[in-house]
Amino acid sequence: MILYLSGTGNTKYVAETLAAALRDRAVDVATLPADGFTLELEKGETLGFCFPVHGWRPPQLMRRFMNGIKVRTETSSEAMYTFVVCTAGDTVGEAIDVFISDAAKSGIKVNAAFDVKMPNTYVGLPFMDVDGKEVEREKIKASVGRLAFVGTEIKKKTEGRFLNYVGKWPRINSRLLGSVFVGKLVTDRYFRVDETACIKCGKCATVCPVADIEYTKGEFPQWKHNKKCMTCFACYHSCKKHAIQYGWMTRGKGQYQFPVNR
Image 1 (tube, rainbow, N blue to C red):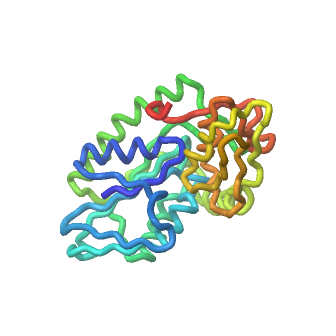
Image 2: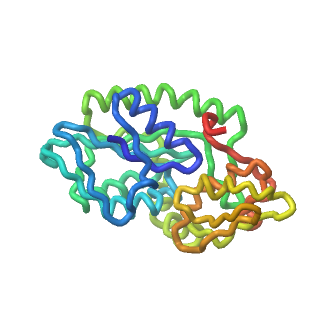
């Protein structure tokens, strides 16, 4: 089984591509209980996790999920093969290290780790925007070969870390900047709706992976401010009228969803 979390479709694509190659199934973590989930695996079944990197760390929802997960299987924890794949528009920092530590606390040993570069989706800071269309296409094209490699290594149950995008300052990015990111920017309080552009279709509420947007037909969407928002920007990217903004930081910026979701 492959458990994944995805906002704009990049990680869903990775998980489903690997599931097809491995003849496995991919399950969205957002559809499972976040604070206590027992996973039943068949003897010898491989366990995989896929997540997008948020602030050089795993998303908060994935971390909560890993904190509460319990795995039941006839295979011993030492013999069970477990892998993790993270996706990022640029560098991943220590995101894999954080995930492996979280998994270990739940009794899960991670045997192999991979990263896959995908089009950038984070637009919540002044200097960050989506990739240009050419870069977007190049990243998706390159991901095909990368995923073929990842799938092959998983089939062989290869162990080790196969990380190409850790970056030059992983500790600074994940520990210092990551803590600022989680403490200040992982919030829905900056999201707002341009009422002159919004057509009240409710698409933003539908795509939100944590159900943080309240929508009633014929009315403007409202964020719940329930501390569940991951700032994955699925709402922002899915709005065809570009009616959702994150304070002033998304003004004039582009939008992106994995092509199959358009």
